[in-house]
Amino acid sequence: QVQLVESGGGLVQAGGSLRLSCAASGLSFSRYAMGWFRQAPGKEREFVGALSWSGGTKYYTDSVKGRFTISRDNAKNTTYLQMNSLKPADTAVYYCAADGPKWGVVVSPDEYDYWGQGTQVTVSS
Image (cartoon, rainbow, N blue to C red; front, side, top):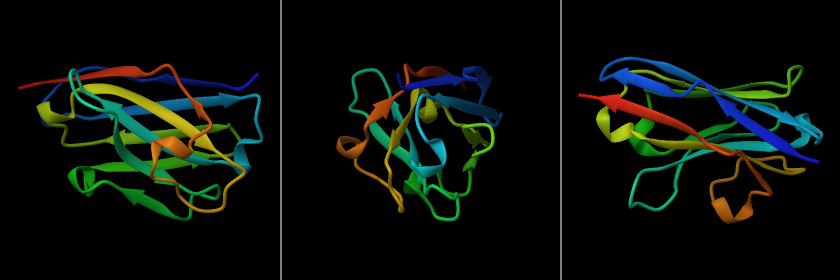
């Protein structure tokens, strides 16, 4: 059974940082493209960023470029989302997702096979 478990969310002031983790089990993690999405209240789920199975290719939505960094540790079956210079507009539930086996990065949520349960990030002004 595939499981993706996010952690690391919380309440932070604007300008602060958080690092989200997503621990995967039940799949060949190193063969999967990974992505991060977020959903704010009353809004649709939004793509944040994604990286390839090796971590060598990354793609971010424009609003987080230069502030967020995605990485992965295939030995630990974990992907990370480092979020710096957080803004109130970043407040949302953040989800990780896995698609594979896949060589490249995946942007569309419809292509992802597995999802975590989400972790809340709240940025206060």
